[in-house]
Amino acid sequence: QVRLVESGGGLAQPGGSLRLSCAASGSIVTIKLMDWYRQAPGKQRELVARITDEGNTNYADSVKGRFTISRDNAKNTVYLQMSSLEPDDTGVYYCHAGILSYYSNEFNYWGQGTQVTVSS
Image (cartoon, rainbow, N blue to C red):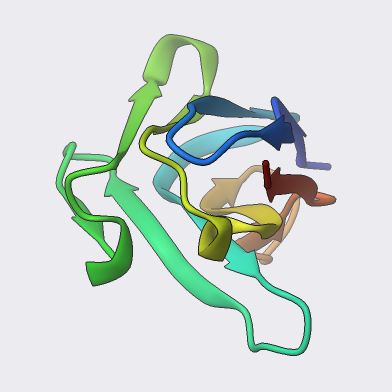
């Protein structure tokens, strides 16, 4: 069974920074992509940033130049460095991964979510 465990959320002031981490564990063959979604109150979940197994990245327009996604393949971990935070960045951030595993045909896995609040 594959699990994603997130950490690093919390409260930050506008203009501040936070770093999120998401570690995958279990019967993993390969991780094809890892990304971060967020869901603000009353809004749909949206893709924030994605990184593929080849290291290609893409970002939502609203976070370009402020957020950086990276991954440590040896640790099966993805990071989201968030800088110049704005109140509109507030929401629950979910880690998602596309993983090929030994004992399941499942491909999409989700973390439990971590709250990010940007407020003065």
